Length: 77
Image (cartoon, rainbow, N blue to C red; front, top):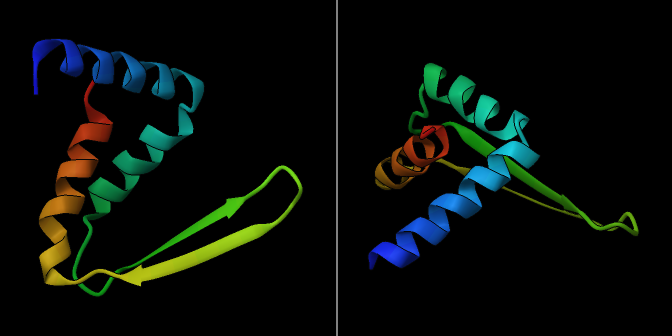
């Protein structure tokens, strides 16, 4: 990835964090608990019209590294 792309992603992430300050706080709280194998992540999406889509996943050992990297990214200043 080139420097320009990294800067663009960093700026977009910083804007996202300003717009949604509860999300990084949530990630910090989860990180303090530690994502462990067997944990369940639940995700929901609600359209402006009220349509709801939901899913969940049970964390497997092979998921831990990716989730750890995501959590680290979400906590960067």
